[in-house]
Amino acid sequence: MYNVNDVFGIQNGYKGFYSSNYLPMTPKSVNDIHKRGGTVLGSSRGGHDTHKIVDNIQDRGINQVYIIGGDGTQKGAYEIFKEIRRRGLKVAVAGIPKTIDNDIAVIDKSFGFDTAVEEAQRAIDAAHVEASSAENGIGLVKLMGRYSGFIAMYATLASRDVDCCLIPESPFYLEGEGGLFEYIERRLKENNHMVIVVAEGAGQDLIAKSIPVADQLDASGNKLLLDVGLWLTHKIKDHCKSKKMEMTIKYIDPTYMIRAIPSNASDNVYCTLLAHSAIHGAMAGYSFTVGMVNGRHAYIPFHRVTSTRNKVKITDRMWARLLSSTNQPSFLSKEDIMEAREAERLANRLPVPASSSEHTKKHSASVLSNASGDVQGAPTLTLSQLQQPAAAITVPAPPSSATAGTASVTVIDSDDDCDATGPPEGTPERETRTWQEAEETDRTRDERPKQPETPERMAPPPGNALHARADEAAAQAAQDVDAF
Ligand SMILES: Nc1ncnc2c1ncn2[C@@H]1O[C@H](COP(=O)(O)OP(=O)(O)O)[C@@H](O)[C@H]1O
Ligand SMILES: O=P(O)(O)OC[C@H]1O[C@](O)(COP(=O)(O)O)[C@@H](O)[C@@H]1O
Image 1 (cartoon, protein in one colour):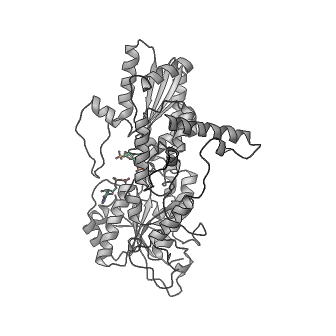
Image 2: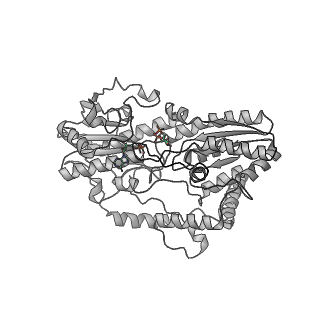
Image 3: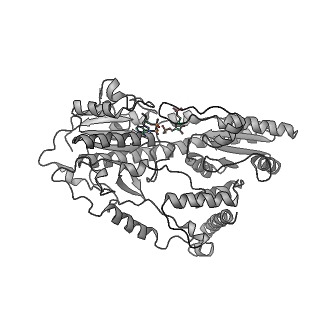
């Protein structure tokens, strides 16, 4: 569709721009890479030298750069975009969110997350089998999630075999009333076995207190985490020993096995849509992070996705649903809840609530999105060309009959951050609302009467008893969190 002749892969992450040769990529060479796990191009931490990267882009005459990765990668893409803009180059930068952690702000979910949740079920199933095969058996599964517990939360909700889910956003404690040990004792008495899921970033403060070690960072500046699964296993064993309680604990760490598998069908489709959307946007001359927002394809300015991180909101319904599904303690004091609400209010720039129930007002990301809900037309580039950490594409100047106009471009910000070079002539009209106007409109939309929050307002359509029970339970759980 766009007459692209030269596509190159950058090997081993950002440093590959200046430390290795670019790898020519053809439809044939990438034909089945989506069926393999990991990355054929390689990845790395650290090594982001903005000037050297942009020098290379410039020297090689690259005019579109597609950058695939998590929030660190998107930050790096933003730096590259700013340097390109400073130099006045006609190069579009498209960030494509890929992380199993799902911690990238604004977008509905990141590519890789669904696959991770699905694969995590296998580890939870194994933990359940092992736990239920022993007397007082505990199965403990560690899942990835450095800063955010989305994989742990969704895997727990999907499995229904989990009795306790621990995530970084919800601090927990071991001893005393309402603590983890008390819950474990109770659950073993009731059921004779239990499954605990812990996200790798959970309980890091607790571990640091019991094993004081200096913080260490990886090459990208991320804190190296202590193994919460191993630590917890020992703590539980020690506690049960002190109580003369017979028990068996099996610790399963499937983290890399989960990240290493090929993406599932739903992620493959999502990847295709991201790829198509990114290509249309870059061909139209824009720079952005691409993603689904409220179910619509959107082009998001880099700074919107890099300024915050997506986290599980423990004051939100989803976490309340999890609490009601596992029956675990919330580990939260009233002060913790108020603090979490206040942090959420400030992060979302919400007004001070008139009453305590006001906090439940949600404020979704203010973005504009494609009115049709989809990007029109599909380029001939394959998604697999974009399924790797970084790829640079050299695009010939579009012929006068270029079909870039078929891309139904949606721009989420009308400030100049979203537009490296401006769209070439003949491309569709840009969104004309200012960012502030857009935000205002979206806020108005967000504040329209929503799905009611209280049990009586949550009444489902008559005749649907199953939904009624589920909704009642969710509302009750939300109230429990409120009341706590
Ligand atoms: N603030 C930043 N500015 C520039 N580059 C960054 C920034 N944060 C991370 N990076 C680079 O992005 C790459 C990926 O970041 P990392 O945190 O390792 O993974 P992820 O993209 O999964 O979050 C690394 O090469 C890192 O150096
Ligand atoms: O040991 P590594 O390779 O640094 O990776 C560990 C990290 O990768 C993550 O899973 C994120 O992976 P991705 O962003 O690549 O999907 C974090 O949760 C975890 O801390």
